[in-house]
Amino acid sequence: MSMPTLRDVAQLLAKNEMSATEHVRATLDALDGLLGTPWENLVAARNDDAALAAATRADEAIAAGDWIGPLHGIAVAVKDNIDVAGMPTRCGSAILADAPPAANDARIVARLREAGAIVVAKTHLHEFAYGPTGAINASGPAAHPHDPNLVPGGSSSGSAALVAKGVVPVAIGTDTGCSTRTPASLCGIVGMKPSFDALPTSGAFPLSTTFDHIGLLAADVLDVSLAWGALPGIAHVRTPVAGLRVGRLRGANWDVADPAIAAAVDAACRALVDTGAEVLDVELPETEQFLAAYPIITGSEAYETHRQWFEHSPELYQPATAALLAAQRDRPAVEYLHAARTVEHLRRQALSRLSGELGLDALVTATTPLRAVSQEQALSADPAVARTPLLRMCIPFNALGIPAISVPAPGVEGDPIGIQVIGLPTTAGGHGSHPAESAALACALAVG
Image 1 (cartoon, rainbow, N blue to C red):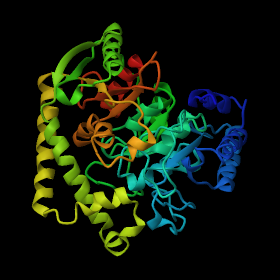
Image 2 (tube, rainbow, N blue to C red):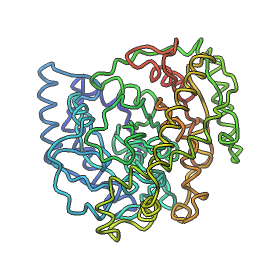
Image 3 (cartoon, one colour):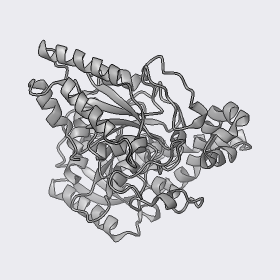
Image 4 (tube, one colour):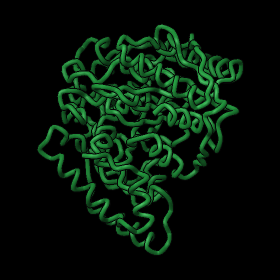
Protein backbone atom coordinates (compact mmCIF):
# COMPACT_ATOMS: atom_id res chain seq x y z
CA MET A 1 0.00 0.00 0.00
CA SER A 2 1.43 3.38 -0.98
CA MET A 3 1.64 6.02 1.70
CA PRO A 4 -0.91 8.81 1.22
CA THR A 5 0.60 12.22 1.81
CA LEU A 6 -1.22 14.64 4.04
CA ARG A 7 -0.60 17.49 1.62
CA ASP A 8 -2.12 15.63 -1.34
CA VAL A 9 -5.25 14.57 0.54
CA ALA A 10 -5.63 18.04 2.08
CA GLN A 11 -5.42 19.66 -1.35
CA LEU A 12 -8.06 17.33 -2.77
CA LEU A 13 -10.37 18.06 0.16
CA ALA A 14 -9.85 21.82 -0.04
CA LYS A 15 -10.67 21.80 -3.77
CA ASN A 16 -13.73 19.57 -3.28
CA GLU A 17 -12.10 16.96 -5.54
CA MET A 18 -12.52 14.39 -2.77
CA SER A 19 -14.94 14.38 0.12
CA ALA A 20 -13.94 13.77 3.71
CA THR A 21 -16.48 10.94 3.73
CA GLU A 22 -14.71 9.26 0.79
CA HIS A 23 -11.35 9.68 2.49
CA VAL A 24 -12.57 8.34 5.84
CA ARG A 25 -14.42 5.42 4.24
CA ALA A 26 -11.26 4.48 2.32
CA THR A 27 -9.30 4.63 5.58
CA LEU A 28 -11.83 2.46 7.39
CA ASP A 29 -11.67 -0.02 4.51
CA ALA A 30 -7.88 -0.09 4.86
CA LEU A 31 -8.29 -0.79 8.58
CA ASP A 32 -10.68 -3.62 7.70
CA GLY A 33 -7.99 -4.97 5.40
CA LEU A 34 -5.72 -5.58 8.40
CA LEU A 35 -8.14 -8.10 9.89
CA GLY A 36 -6.78 -11.62 9.76
CA THR A 37 -3.23 -10.41 9.05
CA PRO A 38 -0.17 -10.07 11.33
CA TRP A 39 -1.06 -6.36 11.59
CA GLU A 40 -4.59 -6.78 12.96
CA ASN A 41 -3.64 -5.72 16.49
CA LEU A 42 -2.12 -2.43 15.34
CA VAL A 43 -5.68 -1.17 15.87
CA ALA A 44 -6.73 -1.05 19.53
CA ALA A 45 -10.18 0.52 19.11
CA ARG A 46 -12.46 2.04 16.48
CA ASN A 47 -15.68 4.05 16.38
CA ASP A 48 -16.64 4.04 12.70
CA ASP A 49 -20.01 5.73 13.23
CA ALA A 50 -18.40 8.67 15.03
CA ALA A 51 -15.71 8.98 12.36
CA LEU A 52 -18.25 8.98 9.51
CA ALA A 53 -20.44 11.51 11.33
CA ALA A 54 -17.41 13.78 11.73
CA ALA A 55 -16.62 13.34 8.03
CA THR A 56 -20.15 14.43 7.12
CA ARG A 57 -19.76 17.56 9.23
CA ALA A 58 -16.41 18.29 7.59
CA ASP A 59 -17.94 17.91 4.11
CA GLU A 60 -20.72 20.32 5.01
CA ALA A 61 -18.28 22.90 6.34
CA ILE A 62 -15.92 22.63 3.37
CA ALA A 63 -18.81 22.86 0.90
CA ALA A 64 -19.93 26.03 2.67
CA GLY A 65 -16.48 27.57 2.19
CA ASP A 66 -15.39 27.02 5.78
CA TRP A 67 -12.22 24.99 5.14
CA ILE A 68 -10.16 25.32 8.33
CA GLY A 69 -6.77 24.15 7.14
CA PRO A 70 -4.72 21.13 6.09
CA LEU A 71 -6.02 18.81 8.83
CA HIS A 72 -9.68 19.50 8.01
CA GLY A 73 -11.33 16.22 7.09
CA ILE A 74 -8.11 14.22 7.53
CA ALA A 75 -8.22 10.74 9.10
CA VAL A 76 -5.81 10.39 12.02
CA ALA A 77 -4.93 7.58 14.41
CA VAL A 78 -4.24 8.13 18.11
CA LYS A 79 -2.10 6.05 20.45
CA ASP A 80 -4.14 4.12 22.99
CA ASN A 81 -2.76 5.87 26.05
CA ILE A 82 -4.46 9.10 24.94
CA ASP A 83 -8.15 9.67 25.70
CA VAL A 84 -10.57 9.88 22.79
CA ALA A 85 -14.15 10.54 23.85
CA GLY A 86 -16.34 7.51 23.20
CA MET A 87 -13.45 5.01 23.06
CA PRO A 88 -11.78 3.16 25.95
CA THR A 89 -8.17 3.89 26.87
CA ARG A 90 -6.60 0.51 27.63
CA CYS A 91 -2.89 1.33 27.29
CA GLY A 92 -2.19 -2.13 25.91
CA SER A 93 -2.78 -3.71 29.33
CA ALA A 94 -5.09 -6.38 30.70
CA ILE A 95 -5.50 -4.33 33.85
CA LEU A 96 -7.57 -1.85 31.80
CA ALA A 97 -9.38 -4.47 29.73
CA ASP A 98 -12.72 -3.30 31.11
CA ALA A 99 -12.02 0.42 30.89
CA PRO A 100 -15.15 2.39 29.98
CA PRO A 101 -15.18 4.77 27.03
CA ALA A 102 -13.44 8.03 27.83
CA ALA A 103 -15.87 10.80 28.70
CA ASN A 104 -13.69 13.55 27.24
CA ASP A 105 -10.97 14.05 24.68
CA ALA A 106 -7.39 14.55 25.76
CA ARG A 107 -6.29 18.11 25.07
CA ILE A 108 -4.21 17.07 22.06
CA VAL A 109 -7.26 15.30 20.58
CA ALA A 110 -9.38 18.38 21.22
CA ARG A 111 -6.79 20.43 19.33
CA LEU A 112 -6.84 17.95 16.46
CA ARG A 113 -10.61 18.20 16.26
CA GLU A 114 -10.41 21.99 16.42
CA ALA A 115 -8.15 21.78 13.37
CA GLY A 116 -10.75 19.58 11.64
CA ALA A 117 -9.04 16.18 12.00
CA ILE A 118 -11.10 13.00 12.30
CA VAL A 119 -10.02 10.22 14.66
CA VAL A 120 -10.52 6.83 12.98
CA ALA A 121 -8.69 4.50 15.34
CA LYS A 122 -6.71 4.08 18.52
CA THR A 123 -3.45 2.22 18.17
CA HIS A 124 -1.25 -0.48 19.69
CA LEU A 125 1.47 0.53 22.13
CA HIS A 126 4.13 -1.08 24.28
CA GLU A 127 2.22 -1.67 27.53
CA PHE A 128 1.70 1.65 29.35
CA ALA A 129 4.33 3.15 27.00
CA TYR A 130 7.00 1.55 29.20
CA GLY A 131 9.34 0.19 26.53
CA PRO A 132 10.90 0.90 23.12
CA THR A 133 10.08 -2.23 21.09
CA GLY A 134 6.30 -2.55 20.72
CA ALA A 135 6.63 -6.23 21.67
CA ILE A 136 4.86 -6.03 25.05
CA ASN A 137 1.06 -5.70 24.96
CA ALA A 138 -1.89 -7.72 26.22
CA SER A 139 -2.90 -8.35 22.59
CA GLY A 140 0.59 -9.54 21.66
CA PRO A 141 3.53 -7.83 19.95
CA ALA A 142 3.08 -5.39 17.09
CA ALA A 143 4.46 -6.45 13.73
CA HIS A 144 6.80 -4.30 11.66
CA PRO A 145 4.87 -2.79 8.74
CA HIS A 146 7.12 -4.43 6.13
CA ASP A 147 8.26 -7.64 7.86
CA PRO A 148 6.11 -9.28 10.54
CA ASN A 149 9.16 -11.10 11.91
CA LEU A 150 10.49 -7.75 13.13
CA VAL A 151 9.10 -5.24 15.62
CA PRO A 152 8.20 -1.67 14.61
CA GLY A 153 9.72 -0.09 17.71
CA GLY A 154 7.81 1.59 20.49
CA SER A 155 6.19 2.59 22.43
CA SER A 156 4.07 4.28 19.70
CA SER A 157 4.19 1.07 17.68
CA GLY A 158 0.72 1.08 16.14
CA SER A 159 0.74 4.77 15.24
CA ALA A 160 4.05 4.45 13.39
CA ALA A 161 3.14 1.19 11.65
CA LEU A 162 -0.24 2.46 10.42
CA VAL A 163 1.44 5.48 8.84
CA ALA A 164 4.18 3.32 7.33
CA LYS A 165 1.60 0.91 5.88
CA GLY A 166 -0.20 3.83 4.24
CA VAL A 167 -3.40 3.42 6.28
CA VAL A 168 -3.44 6.95 7.72
CA PRO A 169 -1.51 10.06 6.67
CA VAL A 170 -0.98 11.29 10.25
CA ALA A 171 -0.88 9.66 13.66
CA ILE A 172 -0.34 10.82 17.22
CA GLY A 173 1.99 9.17 19.70
CA THR A 174 3.74 9.97 22.94
CA ASP A 175 7.47 10.19 23.61
CA THR A 176 8.96 9.78 27.09
CA GLY A 177 12.36 8.46 26.08
CA CYS A 178 12.17 7.60 22.38
CA SER A 179 8.61 6.50 21.76
CA THR A 180 7.82 8.58 18.68
CA ARG A 181 11.32 8.71 17.17
CA THR A 182 12.41 5.09 17.55
CA PRO A 183 9.36 3.57 15.80
CA ALA A 184 9.61 6.26 13.14
CA SER A 185 13.24 5.32 12.58
CA LEU A 186 12.59 1.57 12.42
CA CYS A 187 9.51 1.95 10.19
CA GLY A 188 11.03 4.44 7.75
CA ILE A 189 8.77 7.44 8.43
CA VAL A 190 9.13 10.78 10.22
CA GLY A 191 8.50 11.17 13.94
CA MET A 192 8.60 14.54 15.70
CA LYS A 193 8.84 15.13 19.44
CA PRO A 194 8.27 18.86 19.99
CA SER A 195 9.56 20.75 23.02
CA PHE A 196 8.31 19.80 26.47
CA ASP A 197 4.75 21.13 26.91
CA ALA A 198 4.59 22.49 23.34
CA LEU A 199 1.68 20.07 22.92
CA PRO A 200 -0.46 19.37 26.01
CA THR A 201 -0.24 15.98 27.72
CA SER A 202 -3.45 16.36 29.75
CA GLY A 203 -5.63 13.35 29.05
CA ALA A 204 -2.68 11.14 28.13
CA PHE A 205 -1.94 8.35 30.61
CA PRO A 206 1.38 9.30 32.21
CA LEU A 207 4.56 7.27 32.21
CA SER A 208 6.82 10.02 33.58
CA THR A 209 5.47 13.53 33.94
CA THR A 210 9.07 14.75 33.97
CA PHE A 211 9.77 13.42 30.48
CA ASP A 212 6.40 12.83 28.76
CA HIS A 213 5.87 14.55 25.40
CA ILE A 214 3.23 14.26 22.67
CA GLY A 215 4.56 13.27 19.23
CA LEU A 216 3.52 13.52 15.58
CA LEU A 217 4.09 10.84 12.92
CA ALA A 218 3.71 11.15 9.15
CA ALA A 219 5.22 9.83 5.94
CA ASP A 220 7.73 12.64 5.39
CA VAL A 221 9.02 15.92 6.78
CA LEU A 222 6.67 18.08 4.72
CA ASP A 223 3.66 16.25 6.13
CA VAL A 224 4.87 16.49 9.72
CA SER A 225 5.59 20.18 9.19
CA LEU A 226 2.12 20.69 7.73
CA ALA A 227 0.41 18.87 10.62
CA TRP A 228 2.48 20.74 13.21
CA GLY A 229 1.66 24.12 11.72
CA ALA A 230 -2.04 23.28 11.43
CA LEU A 231 -2.49 22.73 15.17
CA PRO A 232 -4.13 25.60 17.07
CA GLY A 233 -1.59 27.78 18.85
CA ILE A 234 1.30 26.85 16.56
CA ALA A 235 2.64 29.54 14.24
CA HIS A 236 5.16 27.63 12.14
CA VAL A 237 7.34 29.66 9.79
CA ARG A 238 9.67 27.99 7.30
CA THR A 239 13.28 28.59 8.34
CA PRO A 240 16.14 28.73 5.82
CA VAL A 241 18.97 26.28 6.49
CA ALA A 242 21.65 28.59 5.11
CA GLY A 243 23.55 30.16 7.97
CA LEU A 244 22.43 27.70 10.66
CA ARG A 245 25.10 26.22 12.94
CA VAL A 246 24.59 22.49 13.44
CA GLY A 247 26.53 20.33 15.89
CA ARG A 248 27.28 16.74 14.96
CA LEU A 249 27.30 14.80 18.20
CA ARG A 250 30.51 12.91 18.92
CA GLY A 251 31.48 10.62 21.79
CA ALA A 252 30.83 7.09 23.00
CA ASN A 253 27.04 7.37 23.23
CA TRP A 254 26.79 8.54 19.63
CA ASP A 255 29.00 5.86 18.08
CA VAL A 256 27.29 3.16 16.01
CA ALA A 257 28.58 -0.25 14.98
CA ASP A 258 26.50 -0.49 11.79
CA PRO A 259 28.63 1.13 9.07
CA ALA A 260 25.52 1.97 7.05
CA ILE A 261 24.12 4.04 9.94
CA ALA A 262 27.44 5.87 10.35
CA ALA A 263 27.52 6.52 6.60
CA ALA A 264 23.95 7.83 6.73
CA VAL A 265 24.90 10.37 9.40
CA ASP A 266 27.90 11.42 7.28
CA ALA A 267 25.57 11.90 4.31
CA ALA A 268 23.15 13.93 6.42
CA CYS A 269 25.95 16.27 7.47
CA ARG A 270 27.01 16.70 3.83
CA ALA A 271 23.42 17.51 2.88
CA LEU A 272 23.27 20.19 5.57
CA VAL A 273 26.55 21.72 4.37
CA ASP A 274 25.31 21.61 0.78
CA THR A 275 22.25 23.65 1.78
CA GLY A 276 24.37 26.29 3.49
CA ALA A 277 24.59 25.15 7.11
CA GLU A 278 27.82 25.07 9.08
CA VAL A 279 28.39 21.64 10.66
CA LEU A 280 30.88 21.18 13.47
CA ASP A 281 31.70 18.33 15.85
CA VAL A 282 30.41 18.77 19.40
CA GLU A 283 30.11 16.67 22.53
CA LEU A 284 27.37 16.38 25.12
CA PRO A 285 29.27 15.39 28.26
CA GLU A 286 26.05 15.36 30.30
CA THR A 287 24.81 12.33 28.37
CA GLU A 288 25.95 9.60 30.75
CA GLN A 289 24.34 11.33 33.72
CA PHE A 290 21.11 11.82 31.77
CA LEU A 291 21.08 8.13 30.94
CA ALA A 292 21.77 7.18 34.56
CA ALA A 293 19.04 9.46 35.93
CA TYR A 294 16.38 8.56 33.36
CA PRO A 295 15.39 5.08 34.68
CA ILE A 296 15.37 6.35 38.26
CA ILE A 297 12.99 9.22 37.48
CA THR A 298 10.83 7.33 35.00
CA GLY A 299 10.68 4.23 37.15
CA SER A 300 9.83 6.12 40.34
CA GLU A 301 7.08 8.13 38.67
CA ALA A 302 5.67 5.07 36.90
CA TYR A 303 5.59 3.06 40.12
CA GLU A 304 3.74 5.81 41.96
CA THR A 305 1.15 5.93 39.17
CA HIS A 306 0.67 2.16 39.20
CA ARG A 307 1.30 1.41 42.88
CA GLN A 308 -2.25 0.53 43.95
CA TRP A 309 -3.05 -1.50 40.84
CA PHE A 310 0.30 -3.26 40.92
CA GLU A 311 0.11 -4.17 44.59
CA HIS A 312 -3.42 -5.51 44.14
CA SER A 313 -3.18 -7.27 40.74
CA PRO A 314 0.44 -7.65 39.56
CA GLU A 315 -0.54 -10.68 37.46
CA LEU A 316 -2.56 -8.45 35.13
CA TYR A 317 0.62 -6.74 33.91
CA GLN A 318 2.76 -8.33 31.23
CA PRO A 319 5.81 -9.97 32.88
CA ALA A 320 8.32 -7.50 31.41
CA THR A 321 6.31 -4.51 32.64
CA ALA A 322 5.78 -6.12 36.04
CA ALA A 323 9.52 -6.64 36.38
CA LEU A 324 10.24 -2.99 35.62
CA LEU A 325 7.67 -1.83 38.18
CA ALA A 326 8.77 -4.31 40.86
CA ALA A 327 12.34 -3.01 40.58
CA GLN A 328 11.13 0.41 41.71
CA ARG A 329 9.21 -0.70 44.80
CA ASP A 330 11.96 -0.06 47.34
CA ARG A 331 13.73 2.85 45.70
CA PRO A 332 14.42 5.60 48.29
CA ALA A 333 12.73 8.94 47.67
CA VAL A 334 16.07 10.68 48.13
CA GLU A 335 17.45 8.83 45.11
CA TYR A 336 14.57 10.08 42.97
CA LEU A 337 14.96 13.65 44.21
CA HIS A 338 18.70 13.62 43.59
CA ALA A 339 18.18 12.33 40.03
CA ALA A 340 15.51 14.95 39.30
CA ARG A 341 17.67 17.79 40.60
CA THR A 342 20.67 16.50 38.68
CA VAL A 343 18.71 16.46 35.40
CA GLU A 344 17.47 20.01 35.94
CA HIS A 345 20.97 21.27 36.68
CA LEU A 346 22.48 19.45 33.69
CA ARG A 347 19.71 20.68 31.41
CA ARG A 348 20.45 24.32 32.19
CA GLN A 349 24.18 23.69 31.89
CA ALA A 350 23.98 21.90 28.54
CA LEU A 351 21.56 24.34 26.91
CA SER A 352 23.62 27.32 28.07
CA ARG A 353 26.71 25.85 26.46
CA LEU A 354 25.09 24.58 23.24
CA SER A 355 22.84 27.55 22.47
CA GLY A 356 24.80 30.27 24.24
CA GLU A 357 28.53 29.61 24.18
CA LEU A 358 28.57 27.60 20.94
CA GLY A 359 25.72 29.45 19.24
CA LEU A 360 24.24 26.26 17.81
CA ASP A 361 20.82 26.12 16.17
CA ALA A 362 20.54 22.33 15.93
CA LEU A 363 22.23 18.99 16.53
CA VAL A 364 22.40 15.88 14.36
CA THR A 365 23.04 12.20 15.11
CA ALA A 366 21.50 8.81 14.40
CA THR A 367 18.12 8.03 15.98
CA THR A 368 19.12 4.51 17.01
CA PRO A 369 22.41 2.59 16.76
CA LEU A 370 20.64 -0.37 15.18
CA ARG A 371 17.82 -1.13 12.76
CA ALA A 372 14.60 -3.06 13.44
CA VAL A 373 15.17 -6.10 15.64
CA SER A 374 13.43 -9.47 15.51
CA GLN A 375 10.46 -10.36 17.67
CA GLU A 376 12.73 -12.77 19.56
CA GLN A 377 15.39 -10.11 20.20
CA ALA A 378 12.73 -7.66 21.34
CA LEU A 379 11.56 -10.11 24.01
CA SER A 380 15.07 -10.75 25.36
CA ALA A 381 15.47 -10.30 29.10
CA ASP A 382 18.89 -8.77 28.43
CA PRO A 383 18.34 -5.00 28.04
CA ALA A 384 21.53 -4.70 25.97
CA VAL A 385 19.88 -6.62 23.11
CA ALA A 386 17.13 -4.12 22.30
CA ARG A 387 15.83 -1.97 25.15
CA THR A 388 19.01 -0.01 25.91
CA PRO A 389 20.17 0.65 22.34
CA LEU A 390 16.71 1.71 21.17
CA LEU A 391 16.56 4.30 23.95
CA ARG A 392 20.06 5.63 24.45
CA MET A 393 20.39 8.08 21.55
CA CYS A 394 16.96 9.61 22.21
CA ILE A 395 16.73 9.94 26.02
CA PRO A 396 19.01 13.01 26.30
CA PHE A 397 16.56 15.15 24.34
CA ASN A 398 13.65 14.24 26.60
CA ALA A 399 15.85 15.24 29.52
CA LEU A 400 16.67 18.50 27.75
CA GLY A 401 13.01 19.03 26.78
CA ILE A 402 13.92 20.16 23.26
CA PRO A 403 12.44 19.18 19.89
CA ALA A 404 13.84 16.14 18.11
CA ILE A 405 12.82 14.65 14.77
CA SER A 406 13.67 11.27 13.25
CA VAL A 407 13.96 11.36 9.46
CA PRO A 408 14.48 8.33 7.18
CA ALA A 409 17.94 8.38 5.65
CA PRO A 410 17.50 8.44 1.86
CA GLY A 411 18.90 5.79 -0.45
CA VAL A 412 19.39 3.11 2.21
CA GLU A 413 19.47 -0.56 1.27
CA GLY A 414 17.65 -2.94 3.57
CA ASP A 415 15.74 -1.93 6.67
CA PRO A 416 15.26 1.81 7.30
CA ILE A 417 17.75 4.01 9.14
CA GLY A 418 16.72 7.11 11.07
CA ILE A 419 18.63 10.37 11.27
CA GLN A 420 17.81 12.47 14.33
CA VAL A 421 17.76 16.26 14.08
CA ILE A 422 17.41 18.25 17.29
CA GLY A 423 16.41 21.90 17.58
CA LEU A 424 17.93 24.19 20.18
CA PRO A 425 16.01 26.97 21.96
CA THR A 426 16.46 30.74 21.70
CA THR A 427 18.26 30.40 18.43
CA ALA A 428 18.89 33.17 15.94
CA GLY A 429 17.95 30.82 13.11
CA GLY A 430 14.46 29.69 14.15
CA HIS A 431 11.25 31.52 13.35
CA GLY A 432 7.57 31.51 14.36
CA SER A 433 6.06 30.74 17.75
CA HIS A 434 8.41 27.78 18.27
CA PRO A 435 11.80 28.69 16.78
CA ALA A 436 13.60 25.53 17.91
CA GLU A 437 10.99 23.40 16.13
CA SER A 438 11.30 25.57 13.02
CA ALA A 439 15.08 25.13 12.95
CA ALA A 440 14.77 21.36 13.49
CA LEU A 441 12.18 21.01 10.73
CA ALA A 442 14.35 23.01 8.33
CA CYS A 443 17.35 20.78 8.97
CA ALA A 444 15.19 17.65 8.80
CA LEU A 445 13.91 18.69 5.38
CA ALA A 446 17.47 19.17 4.15
CA VAL A 447 18.52 15.78 5.52
CA GLY A 448 15.53 13.78 4.26
